[in-house]
Length: 246
Image (cartoon, rainbow, N blue to C red; front, side):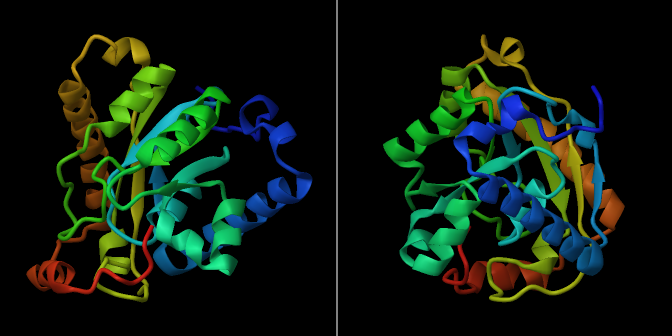
């Protein structure tokens, strides 16, 4: 698979978005790339594993407020992602996240509307980013996975792409309302095709994905060389979860 992916008319659906939206997304992506390179010296491995065309459910671990932008900025193709419904209540921010193709997420789960919209975008041949853990971690490690994403994957017969990263927990954990500089690394694993998971149970698919993401996560952790401090874990568990939600 060619690592030099380009913006693909078939997969980025220009007919569904204005030139302002397409141009604005590219500008924001460039700005994000500069931010992460400058303050986090971001390293990315396996970007060639993002499919060059067609739909894909991008699944990663979830460490920080940064995560949607973090995963999205290493992919050459446009990426949809889920965002908490409460974020849409603040009009200025709602305009921005709608501009970035956010899909509203209920606090208790995606909800029927969120699932339908996710399926719709996958059927259009687009990328959708989902965090199977359902919430940001408390300790920098990978938590148990919810199995809801499997229903979406089966319904659309979509390829699943595992992504693991580390360093974001140190940069901006759920307990802190502001980010700090640091080091972040991401690793994209080989896609899991529909043929590979169609005969597995939902639990088996979730376990398979967790194993694949863990492999990429460990690769990223070796790159940044971080060890999670006990104090950071305590702060995350006891901290206020009201700061920016993703």
